[in-house]
Length: 313
Image (cartoon, rainbow, N blue to C red; front, side, top):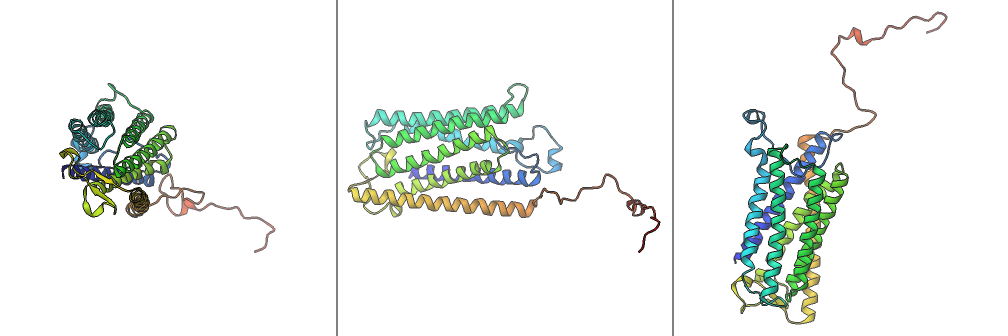
């Protein structure tokens, strides 16, 4: 039960972070498409009255970073404590499980250090100036490292469902790494910035699906079952006895993943439509009306033309 609760909390945090990133990115792009550039994080919007009280370092401006730090701390502690449990479904038993859990905790700790460095650069730019392209480059490396950890965990799993879930999670994380590389090289690519938020949402939904497929009896595919004779740390582990049941379960997970992808695409389109409705779309082109430099009266707007002799009306 504790593992399912952790999966639900992780899913909520990732989906919320992805939605906030997509909304903030779309809002910035629609407000000023010419000066748009991707940002590693988006300060929390404040009203003019509250921001004037303490303009440079208002606490609520860094609410996103505070939330990320809190979630990463919980994740690091959880993975570290999980490493002390024995998992009989891993090849090599306890030592391998301990190493894979510690690898996951170490990769999450690196994300925590990057977030702390980003917060320090916002509070004291002279102490630690971090340009956006460097932050995206470091994030790409950490996402790729996390994907390697997920693929490594999948390779030592004897539980077919757990291995499949870890493998798909590694692919999503690798996609996020590629998007960060694009943003580090071309920060004005709006599609890549929105895609990064969508990848976070997709990862959050897949974390939830992993918890349901492993720990909830109603979502376990037919032919697979929960193992009741394991330790508390892996009480929701599942295993498929027959090859036919295993292939069927893997095919079902692939289908469910495609459903999640379509749902995330729908979220992206709805988010863009809602933000565009409230912010408005500024179209740039040759037919855009140019503003006057200064207000003038109506008679100054007319140009006096000299009469031409020898012309007919």
